[in-house]
Length: 486
Ligand code: UD1
Ligand code: MG
Image 1: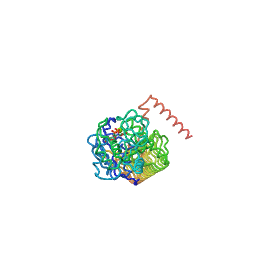
Image 2 (image 1 turned 45 degrees about the vertical axis):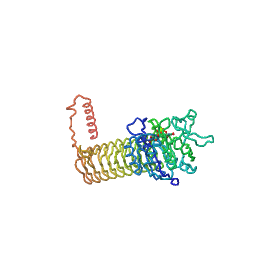
Image 3 (image 1 turned 135 degrees about the horizontal axis):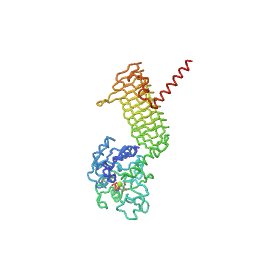
Image 4 (image 1 turned 90 degrees about the vertical axis):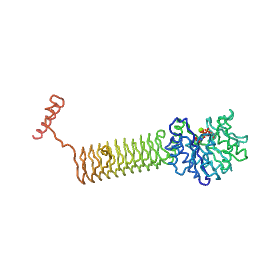
């Protein structure tokens, strides 16, 4: 992609986004796991420009901090007042050296489906046509609101006329200005210096640079993209949802082409940043976010939401909610598991039903199958944690760790009062409330000793159905015993 390397990309992102009716700037709203401006930034960066500038204005502190976190090399330029797209690009150019040559791409921060490939084709076409300006255009079913591409009798590019400035005849044109351009740097600088606000909106229109260039006898042209969706902007929450759904469809299609089974694309949501290997199966109502990666042959879902989770080959994750966790190859999780940050499950390990884990490492082949809370625990390989075990990690002031050794067995319904160490090859008797450490080969039994009080029901519950049942059972037992003796 470097053969048509642009000198600069300017992303206009200073607009208010009033129609979002939001406390946060429009550019920071997300689809597919990335902010709107983040999508455009990623596509722009792929062209490897010498300078990458984002023009910020509304909510600039938030937007700037977000951009720096995404891409430390990005430059920002402030447009104090939103005086129009021409003014935005003027502001953008103030952040780069004033005299460079080459191509400048201008785009908007709110066109999240725009792909690097399309920008690349635009620049290549610009170079091939030998233009001073090339405009990305598309044919759309409803061109209302967009600038229209006006062509001459010979079909050549004439001008862009804004919707509000257009005649009824011009409004019938369905080829629109996508708001994405390549300019020769000198032509852009010169045009920007000559803009006026003589138009229906009293703004400095970037599009007027094209008329100025043409008036000077320079070559200007259009590059039509067949994929109009890539040029669509987000102005309100309805478009946010529509473009979010379209992006998701595109992401799932890409994965399916690469060998992922998506049983129900309508209820499966996968962020752009997620990586899926071949023969992964996603069952209905699965959502994969952030840096989640899934290795070959794993099955996720149904009804599973995972954020920043890595999943080994052949693992199975059923009806689970998890974040910042690592699941080993061949492991099994769920149904109904809650994996909180810092959960690490080893190869062929198991986190089963109604189990919550947090900051816990569960070794290879170890099993936590049912009804457990494991917080701040290290569980050795091959250990087995009985149903209903609670790792009591919090004393009301601080969190404490527990270590369970290899191949140890924790009896059901035990509570381990941390900090505690249970050695390799040890046992806890069921129902233990553990307050001392346990050595190798030992069994800890920490519970009330059982005593059975004979005749209690007859004395304390005389005349009840329970007493009658006890009496009958006793008689049968006595008869059986005497029968055996014969
Ligand atoms: C612009 C184009 C129009 C095109 C449309 C495509 C002009 C005059 N018109 O119109 O031909 O069809 O985009 O969507 O350029 N922005 C700033 N500062 C400003 C004004 C805008 O940063 O002062 C940013 C906005 O945040 C947005 C982008 O520039 O990201 C486009 O601005 P917008 O107001 O949406 O332009 P349109 O009027 O839609
Ligand atoms: Mg717009």
